[in-house]
Structure formats: C-alpha cells, structure tokens
Image 1 (cartoon, one colour):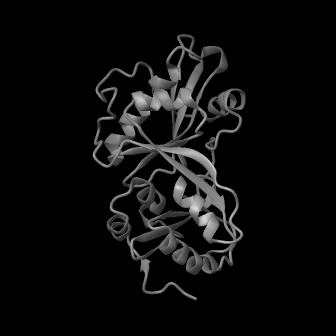
Image 2 (tube, rainbow, N blue to C red):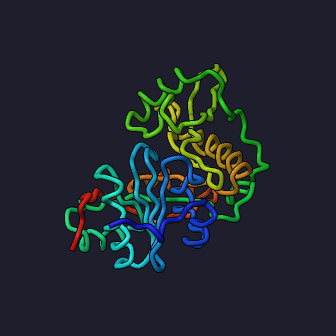
Amino acid sequence: MKVKGMELRAAAEVTAACEDDTLLVWAAQGMRGGVRAWTLGEAVAVASPELNRRDRLTVRGQASQVAAVVRLALPELGPSYRLLGDRALIVELGERLPGTGPARPFEWMDTGPDAGGNTGGESAAADPGPAGWLQGADAEVGALLAGASPSSWAVPGLPGVRRWAGLRAADGALVATAADAWSCPQVGFVAGVATDVAHRGRGYARRVCRFAFAALAAEHGRVALMVDTDNRAAIGVYERLGMRGRPVAAATVGATADG
C-alpha cells in the first residue's frame, strides 16, 4: 500500500507537522534529495538515507499511529532503514511491529530552537582560545581519532562531514577536535568529538565544543549531537555548554512489518 496523500514535500511542512521538534527537523535535512516524510494524525515519520552513517526512519507521535505510518512506508523504503525516536516510543514500536530488533539506547542533546548564537552555559562571545576551523588537517584529524576515538561516527572524507574544528597545543600539535557533520539548514550537528589521550583532563574538549557550538548556532539557529548514555563525562560537558538531553533509541525493523 502506498502512503500517497500523507506525504510531506517541503521542510516547512515537516517542521509544522512535528511542531518544530529538533530531532525530526534535523532528520528532514532540509528535504535534500532522497529524503521523504509522512504524517498520519499526530504521527510523523522522516526517512533519511545515509544520515549519520545509517538509513534512518525518524519517528514521533502516538505509538499506534506511528506504527501505521511505518507499516505503510517500509515497503517503499526497503530493509536498510532503522527506527530512531524517543526511547519509550521505540520500545513500544518493538511490541507492535514484528521483526523489530532490540532498542539501542543513547542520548540526543540539543540547544533548542531558540538558541540563536548563544549556547547557554558558556557565552558565544567567550574567548574560545585557539580553537577554530581547521584547514588541510584531515590527516591530523584522522590520526587523532585513530588513537583517541577509533569508533567515531565522523571521520575525514565521509559523506556529510563538512569540516573540523580543532584546538592545538603550544607546540602546534592537534589535541582536540569536533566535526560539523550532517548539519542541515535549521540544525547544526556535531560529531567526532575527541581529545588526544595524553592531553585529557585539561578542558580541551569543552573548549573546542564551545567554539563549534557557538559557530553552528550562529549559522543554523540551534545545535544538536548524539552521545552514548553511559558517557557521563561528555554529557556533563555538553550540559555545561547549554545542551539539554533527551533519551532516544534506534532499532532495526523488518521491511514487511505487519500485525
């Protein structure tokens, strides 16, 4: 069955349907090529290919309505899409959609739609020290990530990774970094935050993130990122920089979910 008649065609339509929910607005990616979205009642589903290294079906709304939209959309999308949404919703969808995998929990954090150029806990006007956008430093960033964060979702050269912020020690060595990756017109997105192992505990991650958050908030209006639930140190840094947390989850789902 097709979902014609419920499909949203423009980013503004998605924003209105989801009540400006930053997670869904980010998933829509300004409705770039390949992105599709639907609504049914209060439910909204946004299908985004190759978003943060996954084909994602980001959802919001009452579980029964969301399940109905998912059942209609999946045959058009194929089996590569993974559900993403508030944790309680993804868990309930797992009970409603046979073939859904276990919910993988993590945290979505954002500055909200009214951040503007101010990232909260630290003023955007505060001196970020030597942090700034890097030029021609992909090899350095790759080496830092290989040692400090080998499982980083953002790496140099990956589609959607736009640029890297960095902070250098007095000797010029790159000691901390963060990526502007998978941002969209309304939401700047940060990934690939890492600090060289030998330089941890000195506030370098906070300083490079303070710069990146302020720069992206000024450009996009708000900033978001994802972080593992058990990474309490990173969550604390982001909270002090004005981020607010939201428990979310992802799960695989069968292309022919029914029932």
